[in-house]
Amino acid sequence: MDMITPTRLSVLSLLLTGAATLSAQTHAPVHHAATTAHTATTHAAAGPAGCAKDVPELSPKIPALPAGDCPKVLYTITTTPSVKLDYVSPMEGPDLRTTLGLEGSSFSELYVDTKVGSGPLAEPHKWYTIHYTGYLTDGVKFDSSLDRKEPININYGQHMVIPGWDTGFGGMHIGGKRRLYIPYELAYGPNGKPPTIPAKSELIFDVELLAQSDARPEPPAKPAAQPASSDGKPGATAQPSAAPITATPRAVVMSYLSAAKYKASDWSFSISDTTIDSETIDAKQDKATIVAHVVFKGRGTYMSVAPQTFSLVMENGTWRITGTTPPKLIDPADSGASPL
Image (cartoon, rainbow, N blue to C red; front, side):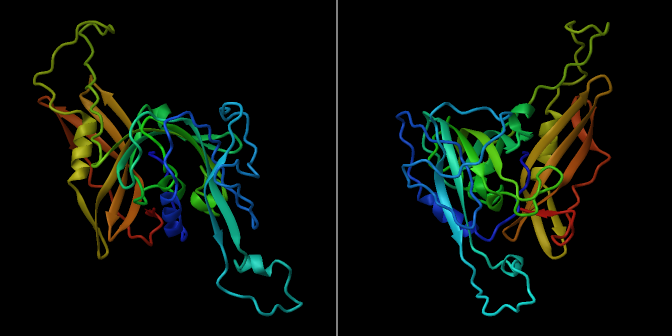
């Protein structure tokens, strides 16, 4: 994540209210259970202290939870159609109500706290630093910050991520770990996000809350790659550059994006978040390539664009972006941009 960018749902205002009522964890050992979201027309959620019912079975490919843990309900949402179907002709089939979207539904986000953090209680609207791994219920791992060895940063409750994440950390302490089961209504909706997320996919996330801050954390600077030695042998003494390196390629790209402004139609946008997907440095040729995901914000709306590739060269010990233009921002109606 970067985490996959979310689709806004009409129930978001209800989610924020539901998350605010969650009581904080205590520091005593607490065993909750795997977070699971239900998507039945009728749904029986357990009471606040009990285990949730109708928890879907997970593939054994997903790491097992400690014996005895059970999923508990973080919150439940029930929708009731505002339109009444007064008359149906005998010529219509029995599925008319479903076709018209006039059936109510109930779904829950569930959780298991696999480790209670020893740090401060997580506060709303702060920047969270998170490690995560995401699974489909069939065991397919579709994303992981651990594999990339780089956590992500989100502004909690500010719609930068799917609603199930935007409301899924309530009651956690810094250093805590939690498993979330997120129904498709709180994830990517009935259409999913092909090819990675199939339609109506319930998602399972193992998350670790590493830190929180008032401002967006600066990305960690990685040391510049050492140039090869004169004999080409690894571990030999490297020849120094003609001038000291002032910033890594990653830092140069992040600085470039943070100062950029963009415009699409009559909307003005600024960079809200950037995640580096990959970084390749060719020390021999003094060249580097950075691939980054960019999230824009304008008029209170968030949009993402496809990964942007930046080429850099080193001149006099300084990395410089070359042969590129600012990321192209596309109108919200265009399929190239995704509203979050």
